[in-house]
Amino acid sequence: MSKVKVEFINTCSCCEEYGRIIRSVASGHGDKVEVKIYIAGKDFDYLKKYGPVTRGTMIINGEKRLDTLSREIIEKAITDALARSGD
Image (tube, rainbow, N blue to C red; front, side, top):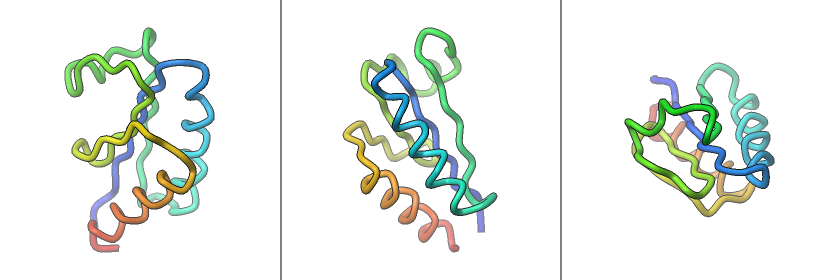
């Protein structure tokens, strides 16, 4: 079983809540989920990987990009990724 890596690019103060939701959902799965939150304008590591992002975006395992987010979508995406990883 491998860890699921969830990255979130926070592009504005409105997206801050999504970062909290992602952390909350991930914490319910213990150390099976690794979370990295980038803040646009402060962090630039994500630019090399994903290019410019103008909307709050969640990326799972460097592949699946989601930019229409809600608690339900976040929970489902993380749960699906854990199921695919062999958990």
